[in-house]
Amino acid sequence: MRQLMLNGAVETFDVVIIGAGLSGVGTAYHLMHRCPTRSFVILEGRDVIGGTWDLFRYPGVRSDSDMHTLGYNFKPWKAAEAIADGPSILEYVNETADENGIRDRIRFGHRVRKADWSSADATWAVEADCDGKVVRFACNMLLLCGGYYDYENPHRPVWDGERDFKGTVVVPQFWPEDLDYRDREVAVIGSGATAMTLVPAMAMGGARHVVMVQRSPTYVVSLPSRDKIANFLRRVLPDRLAYAITRWKNVIRVSRFYRISRRKPERVKTLLLRLVRKALGPEFDVEKHFTPHYAPWDQRICLIPDNDLFDAIKSGQASIRTEEIDRFTDDGLRLASGEVVRADVIVVATGLRLQVLNGLSLSVDGRTVNAPDHLSYQGMMLSDVPNLILTFGYINASWTLRADLTAEFACQVVNELERTGNRQATPRLTEEAMREMPLKPWIDCFSSGYIQRAMHRFPKQGDRDPWRNTQDYLADRKSLKGAPIADGVLQLSNPQGS
Image (cartoon, rainbow, N blue to C red):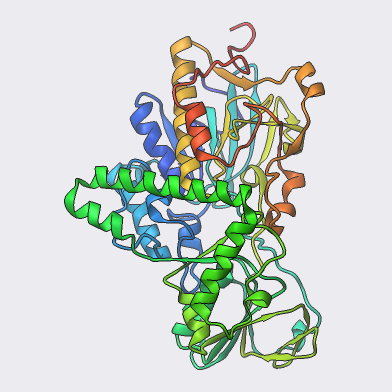
């Protein structure tokens, strides 16, 4: 591609990938194998590979999906545990990078801040901070694979009296390595996946007692950490075939469960609560602590392995309070009822904050890209923004299912541009379609707080293809596999005068 002149040195690549976590490493693999003549670089703000799986170090950190679907479609997950701990997932990502020479393509310590598209040159000008200096890159295609969490700013409510508390307050995203909670009373505030992970892990890790303090309940389902069918298939079949069969088994199982949940929510609710009662026994107040006031999959259902949370509660190592927090006290938390939960350590596991477009400042020909002013094309591009592809996984299934689809789509776009001699791929929405089509939030079927708090900053979606951001892997796969890239909406072109 043609060199773009900027102030200072500029490195030029066909493709720039933002982020060296699960999505970025997987996307790099697809580029190397599907677009072997295209040059690319990965820009990673931190000093290591892994993203979420390196950053999160709290006790018990693990996947909340099975690894046969959270794993890449090209690299079999070979461990016996289908629900894996964080270090095992990090090892898997690092192994993928090293097996394929991807580590050599990564620029660590490069935190991308902004990118500007030039229509005259069909080029993204990308700026990153590195060691206090601004480093510049130019590329034709920009792939955002940095995830959707704001790692530096979790959702952190503030309560009255926090300064009065004489113990230790911890946020899971910034877990201190030297925290010793053995033989100490622990309170975990929250009811999401992080809290569900922390409570049994800290109980088994030596805490005197762990109390989960939640404002409202969440649906919880337990699955075996080991998939007996997957492990049997690995013993009798080649790794890739066994993995593919298990992957499809789990895709179909999860998809079917989601669809049944949406069609027959009361039946699924009854089933979920029956399983909880079976695990905790007739004396436990399941109605109060595990019965949400919403339907299954209005929010994500929390997955726990091998009944670990339920076992911690039954053994007396852990307990639950479902009540508003009034304030912190010097020795714990006072609830709205007046009860005081004694604690030496309080863990604030109140959720994550989402960031749009990897937190970058983007512009097209000097005009700022304000995400809510654009529509999502296939859940992967933005209307009127050329050569930008973003990875955003499913909320009702494994993240990597969507990440793999997005990477494959990106490779198709890159190859189609090369084949046709074009340099720009831009989703265009006609004025007539814009007037006729109702607009909806980027994610419109999910009531979780971390989603709702952020939707005003995200792109919109329409009510018809290809402007819908579906949460349906099977439907997405069917619509994308073999479909023409130039579909009449995604327009391929060259800069004027070229």
